[in-house]
Amino acid sequence: MSPPAAPHPGPRRPPSGSLRWLADGVAVVGPDPGGVVAVGAAQLPTAPGVVTVVGEVAGPEDWAAITEALPALVQPGTAVRLGISGAGTALGSGATPDRDASPAAALSRQVQADVYAPDGPVLLVPGGTLYADAGWRLSTGSGPSTPAGLRHPRPEWEPEIDTVARHTGGALRARSVPAGLWLHRQTADRTPVSYDDPVYAIPPDSRRAVVVVGRPGLAPPDPRAVRTVLDALDPSVLLTPYGVPLSLVVDLASDLVGRWGRPVEVATGLPALDDEHRLVSASVDPDAGDWWIPPVSRLRCAPERAPTAVTPPAVVAGMPRDGDTYRLTDGWVVEPTAWGLWVRPAHLPDDRDDPRRRPTDGTRLTILVGLPGEPPPPEVRTLLSGLVARLTPQQRARTTIVPDEVDVLVHAGSEAAPAATDGGRISGPRSGR
Image 1 (cartoon, one colour):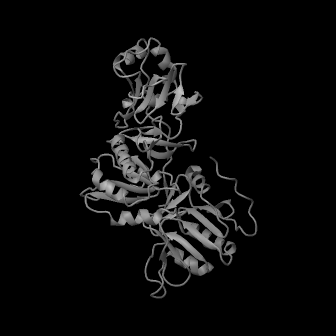
Image 2: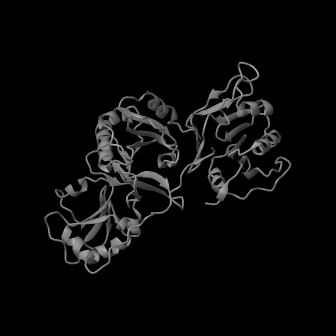
Image 3: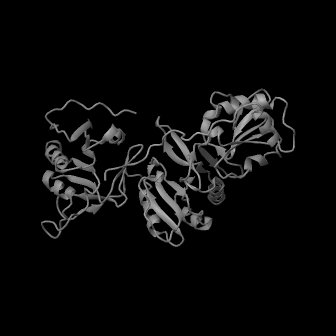
């Protein structure tokens, strides 16, 4: 996605080598190698009467560009949002005891307008969100600044999520992150996580919070402690594993379904945007050594049934659909599941749905052929060859075909699929530090 072309400078846009305008009311300041900040800033929501400046102040000339440009742009009733790390942090005693001396407060007094700025680092999250872990501050030109949330735009679920994060303790660590809440086992050293962690790159959804369960390198958190936190949240949350077995999160969702009496959705990995800005799920191995993109990205756990795929995976694109299955031949279908793909007869006896409930750790893709205890059909190699060819190299490298005799038959005389070292770059957050 390319940012919109910058409009021609006019009388309301003082020219500056440090300030580049992307559109009415949105500008980038400071160095921007490769234009990555401009791409993210172009995705930010715009609103009448709000001027947003995003970037890094690398020197006095950058801040001077802001203070020189904004007085000509800010009219009565206009607000300013500074997506600049530390712009809302008090630097010392102000002119009077009731005023802080943050750059944002000084700018607010200069332009006589409300100025929102982060107290500490700010992240430009893929999808168009500005996130300040230490919070945004609102300066009004008089008096001390006041708290103004953690996210811009501010989702409805933010107060609930951040309250739970502040009041969760014991063996469970709860962190507010841009997309929602991160729950993992408490560590003794309480080492702060890096903002480069992919958890901070999950695109926020204004409709519901994402709850990330687990952290690579740590043992899975106590499910009972996680359930206690989930009970305090809105049932619309999206659960996702991070370095823990997918089955653990599916079990948590199934437990919630039983108590809430409504469906709960699970992402098979961390929601992320790929290079083409498509939303995918990136499943991270327990040791954080590698990751992959499973064919099924979202599961819906509903009362009295096994988890089902929310949307058709790319591997079945174009196949005729019948409910939860996709036709391979007149008598055989493929059914996406939590653990992979079930290639089976089109007409399934009511008492043969146990395979749908196979456990999975989320690190591999299983292709199950036929019904347990029954010999595979003679045409099994033909059935599978086209299906396997639809998988990405990364997915093929993690595929296990069951039963074993089918796996041997399919791979007989063929070269093993090469392992993919990269499943496509996933966008990360940008910091203005």
